Length: 128
Image (cartoon, rainbow, N blue to C red; front, side):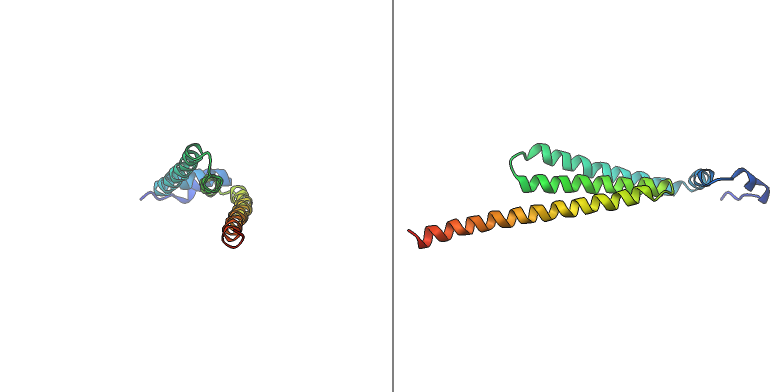
């Protein structure tokens, strides 16, 4: 393991140099960040593939958009953790609120379609 002498600390003066020093001597953290960014990229690609594959079903399009947003959030959080900055994490929280609103809209649409189909079935049974 690498150890620093007390005289070598004058080289590390700001937060930027601290992060470079930390990631230079602890490469296992960089490997974790790299794996998480690859996982976020795979989520984004899966969501894009789902959008391109299913053009007709609106709820599946919403779910694929959710997957894309989660992949982007994963990337934002990992990059902000790497840079020691909170902006990416705050932006990820805003994206999560947008995703929650989108899920509520999808649920409302699914329930309204279900209720319309139930009304059609009951009309066909009772008003023949």
